[in-house]
Image 1: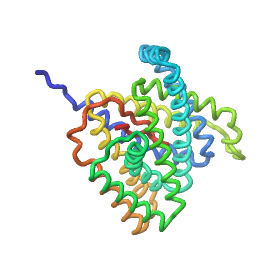
Image 2: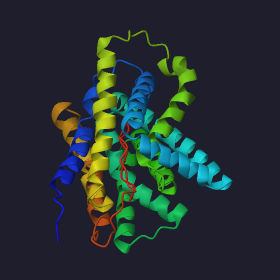
Image 3: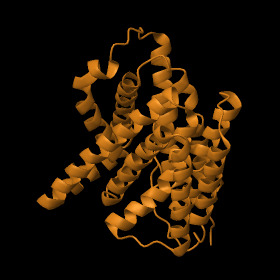
Length: 316
């Protein structure tokens, strides 16, 4: 029997998360601009790229999604519209908060949120979708809660921002699970299109009172942010999911926040405290415990990471 060579798929999955691991660089290069303004152009350029790709190369997937919605019952069609709009709103909140945190608080806070996110997603899956949790996963949830307490005793503001990023993305992943029968790229394109339609009238508010000129540097960096750090990793992740289980992708996704931490300490010389280090170690241990016994998981293509600034994590 012919065995599939999985090396290209592992390479694609690893490459996607390595790219997201270095996302602080284009964001820091835009630190002089308001977070809302960065968000506006990041969403606009990402939508433009995704629309072009969908129309030119994924038209069949688009038509299948449209046919699926048309063939569904009115209740299911309303459900599709509701959770698509909700997903776009949550993703917008997640991206805006992540941009603000990286540029105005620190990279550590953003990185911590994406270590915390999968465990919060599991809790929401248990509470809202009645998904089962193993004993080791409950232990991991307890340890992650303790790590939050440690962060909160030192810097409550950092903890609240981490929780906002993690929860907005965790709820986003729940909407993805509910809409799992639809093509993920088509769905993301529609979500970002709706998000852009919603935020476009508020551009002046997103821009604020900033007088910084939108020069070539700004458009180059937002273009890189949209093409290299949003669309490219999405398709690398989608390719990886053709042969790798979502459980495997779930492990690979931790490359992203780990690299974020390395970049924060080594390149940007961010400082930390002993309490924060203890919290980071604790959440990392909880991640390992949470992911024990993945062998029994069935392969699925339902998971899709959607870039930070969020990125976009794995729906297991």
